[in-house]
Length: 86
Image 1: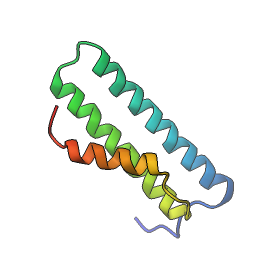
Image 2: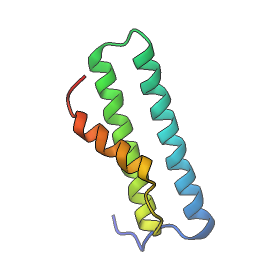
Image 3: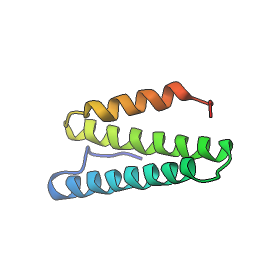
């Protein structure tokens, strides 16, 4: 799929806001599973989903020319480091 570049102006902000909302949803799901009686395999799937949403958000920030907050960078690194561990 060819793209002319990142969404501009308000569309770009809306896109970033949508991706950030997806990050928050993924975090809530993972937190809920950690605090509940979820199996380790379910937690791992949710952790991977969070990593994917964080990476999508980070990519969109980079395309927009915005800096990646340290917290997000560190969270991505932590999740990658956990890999397949429960």
